[in-house]
Amino acid sequence: MVKISLIEKKENNLFVKWSDGEKSNFNYLWLRDNCPTAHDKNSNHRMFNILEVPLDIEAKKCKINDDGKLEVVWSAGNHTSYYDQEWLRKNCYTINNKKKYLSPYQLWNCSLQKNLESISIEHDEIIETEEGLIKWLELLHYKGIAIVKNSPTKDKSAFKVLNRISHTRETFFKTPFEVLNIPKPNNSAYTAHALRNHMDLPWFENPPGYQFLHCLINSAKGGDSSAVDAFAVANYLKNNEKEIFETLVKIPLKFRDKDYTQEAHRSFYAPAISLTKDGDFNDIRFSVATMDALDCHPDLMKEVYEAHHRFGNLLHDDKFQIKFRLVPGDIFSFNNRRILHGRTEYDPNSGSRHLQGYYMDRDEIIGRLSFLKNLNKKKAL
Ligand code: OGA
Ligand code: ZN
Image 1 (tube, rainbow, N blue to C red):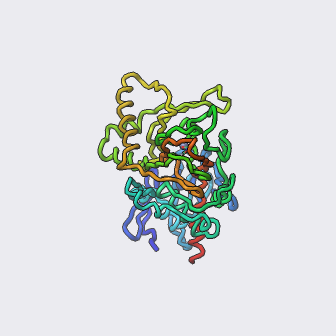
Image 2 (image 1 turned 90 degrees about the vertical axis):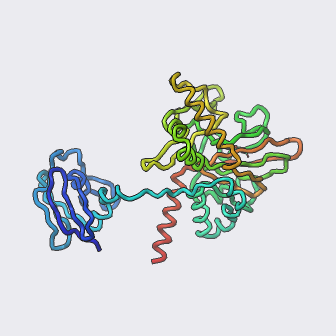
Image 3 (image 1 turned 120 degrees about the horizontal axis):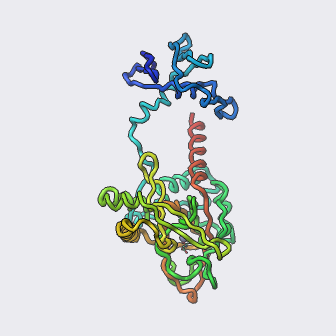
């Protein structure tokens, strides 16, 4: 194991040299805040209050003690801290900040169309085995898309397989929401019209992280599905059309739709592409149907429309999108803030079409996956 080979007190931090030659700087306030006694043993929540510590706190004395702990006697608060070397190394922000970020996302384009089996998973495999559930969750997290095959086609029957992951996310469209051709629809999804590639509910502050469209009946002419990895399109722009990419990241668009009363509206501003702290893709906001009349600064409108135009056209480009037809028993599952979905127009007089839709938060997918992977790791030991 790597050990501390040298400690030096500096003005604001403790300088540490490791046996493998790495160097760390541990800020005094950071060290004091992360004293192992700072946390409650059961909840692991921090009970200690750093806000009461003077900002000029420093190490009065420090050494590696006989137990191999880094021992720090503090200049304020009459306290001594004992740090585990392995913990310090693992949590060293000097070293961790130098590591190259690796994205979990496997971006895809139209070539996925030839290999739809790679994103398919049997319903019963998910119900009966943990491996099946993990495979579904991994597809959702890494590729953003999965098609569950051969599910039952009874009303609301997708709850059972979805609850293998977690609870669903409620909205005023109800759960499930019924994707049917109805008179006086409150949403264009509830018509027989074509739906261009879009995400659902971009006018929410926090649009659902995942969406599940369970196909019960699809015997009408038309109504074929499409999907596009908008992270892949964003990545293409980032590498090839930097100015357009920057505009999409920087300038908020406005989305709006009717709320459940059908009389009031809700709206939300967000850029088309948002990034994580590591510069990875976080969210996409795109829906031609619910983008409001934009009200950005007049000097920006031309640039915003040019970027929106380019992004929107690439999101419908056959180099990027895939096309497929849902059959009864399919659950088309996808990351709603990454993968845009659409359908072609259908003829409601030629047959029937009925999908039931469900939403789930991203936390549920990622949380369940990391729980199961951890559990599996423990089992293997
Ligand atoms: C929706 C939707 C797709 C379809 O309900 O939001 O996009 O295939 N439906 O009907
Ligand atoms: Zn939709």
